[in-house]
Image (cartoon, rainbow, N blue to C red):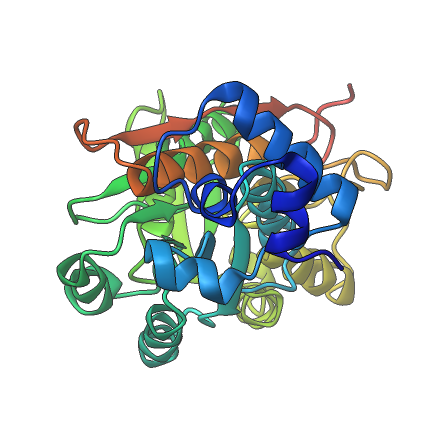
Length: 333
């Protein structure tokens, strides 16, 4: 493993010049910089991250606070974030907030103690009035991902209202007059917005539609229990379900199977969030797919631009979604 002196000798420059190239503490001519970088490769030099941080007050690391890491959606989002951060020369330090305010508070404190250069946060319920202001007051650059909040920072999240309105309206167009929505964790913006989309479709229907909302709390077990309870009275059950995240879709499907109800013949089902296997098994799920790759890439770029000095206006962005019309809704194609 080469040392700075080895790099300096190989490049024909001083150790001070090598330090300036490493830490970007002084302008170095392009030709000299390239000689130093080539010498680093030749001597197998590895940057001392701690020493660099002491010189530059930067660690080239990003903190990530996110929930439900076992959920394929969030796992894919983490992968997208890590890949983009690595491309831009940053490492990722992450933890699971478990969508709990106190767990999130402890996690954010740990990330700040690690002196990360910035944070990407999928905020837990009530975070905008408790934990997020502390990060802002600390002066650490921050980008919210997946869920917007009423705080002054860059944010990127999917469109929630219109896609949910779309899949609910599709059920109405198919003639359903009693539709239930399985809602996610209370207190987070994605749940609020998807409920708004559901309600918008119902209020604009051309005929009266009875509705019920049951809380699945964004988890398979919660959705399973809620659907079992809802369908306990088999004489007045809904004929269709709108499920507002992928984990709850799994719980709903299990519950309907255990109740002996077939999708879509007896209960139509549409969902927000797609699966890799949603188009493989029967019924094929009519679902909204989020652009996870774009969301992760945009969030990392927003954050690193702030870390590296961007002072433009705060951006609140929406990433697009894709509507996959399959046959769990009752359509044949």
